[in-house]
Amino acid sequence: MLEGKVALVTGASRGIGAATARALAEAGARIVLVHRDSAAAAEAVRITLPGPGHRVVQASVTDSGALATIAEGVRAIEGRLDVLVNNAGTSKVVPHGDLDGLDDATFDRIMATNVRGAFATIRAFRRLIDDSGGGAIVNISSVAAKVAYGSNVAYCASKAALETMTMSLARALAPSIRVLAVAPGLVDTEFTRGWDPAVRQRQIEATPLKRLATPEDVGATVLAAVMLPDTTGAVIPVDGGRPLGT
Image 1 (cartoon, rainbow, N blue to C red):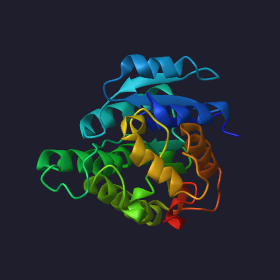
Image 2 (spheres, rainbow, N blue to C red; image 1 turned 30 degrees about the horizontal axis):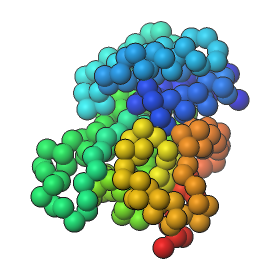
Image 3 (cartoon, one colour; image 1 turned 180 degrees about the vertical axis):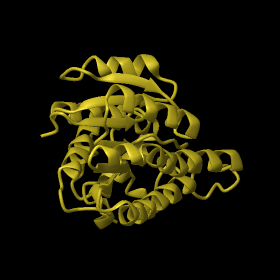
Image 4 (cartoon, helix red, strand yellow; image 1 turned 90 degrees about the horizontal axis):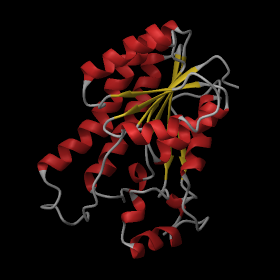
């Protein structure tokens, strides 16, 4: 499906990012795995990917200069970019009623990574995707954007902003580039395994399908989004029907 194509995945060293990189590689793409500070973990993912030509690069999505340098490297080495997956993100568990617990530094870090970081990454790679004949950008959002329940208030707000930005950029970058979002519910990752078990169980019980999504579920949905030829600006849920729950 993606033979001869190149995909770049941010936050690719674990969880959803790793599963997405694997799904795209299994479809035939060469993968550029971007990590912030997890070189060993990213390399461990790379060596498991099927097919040749995958490589690991380091950058924070909050560092626009580093992103520009990576874009230059992709142009020089891979020669093209067809798929960009904005998966890098951050959060911290703070109860929604604990306004003092969500300090300015945490709020700003979440917004800088989850919103500005995604925008900066798109800005850095947009011309390369255009020059490659167009392609798809997939932003990893969250059901938190709609249900306003998640690890903290800022996280929910950041994902709502990301979905609005997805629609804005889908309009701005058409017709060459399609921009979509994939919005998981609670996913069984290293981060959510650290949640209070009672909180996790309440979320499962409030989900009609009565299960947590897996990173592989999300990766498969990203691949499906990439393959939709006439869809842009859409948000595709992977949430077990969570907004239908109580």
